[in-house]
Length: 230
Image (cartoon, rainbow, N blue to C red; front, side, top):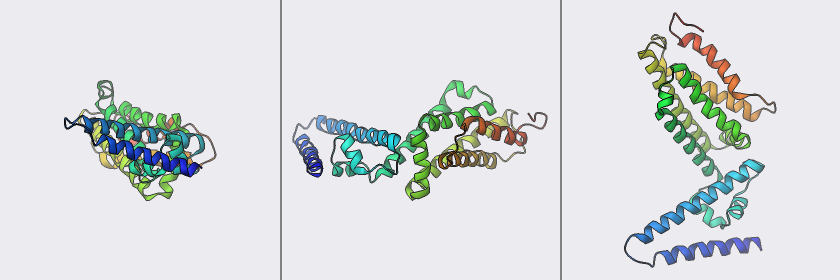
C-alpha cells in the first residue's frame, strides 16, 4: 500500500510538471516551475534534516525521507542523488555562513585573535545547536567519500579564511611576522576538525568551545608578536 501511494505521488508530480509546460510563452511558466522546483527541493531537504535530527543519519532511509516530504522515492532522486547529498548541501550552507560572517563590519573591526575565536565559535555553536545532525555528518564523512570530500572542501575554505585573517594580523602588528600564516591556519583548522571528530564519535560529553579556546590559547603563544605571549 505504501509503495503504491509513493508511486501515485510520483505520477502526480510528473503530471503537474507536464501541465506546467503547456502554458503561455511569456516566461511565467519557467518562473513557476523553478519556484515549484525550489519549494519541493526545500521540502525534501527539511524533511531529511528533521529525520536526521530525530533518529540519526545512519538509521534514516530515503523512503522515510520521501514519505515525510510527501513525495515519491523517484521524486527524491530528481533532487538528490542519495541522502549523503542532503548532507553536502548542509556543508554548502555552512560555507555560506562563514563567507557572510567574514563580510560583517563588526567582525572586521575585531582584533585578529577575536576574529579567529568568533569564526570558530560560529562553527562550534552550529554543531552544539544541532548535535545529532553534526555527529551524523562527522560519522558519515568516515563512511562516504562524497561527504568526506565536502567536509575537506569546507575545511579548506575555513583554512583559507584563517590564513587571510592571520596575514592581515601580521600587517597590523598583531601576529608574529615570522609566523607562516598558511601553516598556522592549517593547524587551527585541523585542530577544529579533530575536536569535532572526537566529539562526534566519543560517548563522553564535552564542551566544544571552551576546549577549542584552550587549544587556541596554546597556539597563540607562537602566533603573537614577540613582546606579547599571553
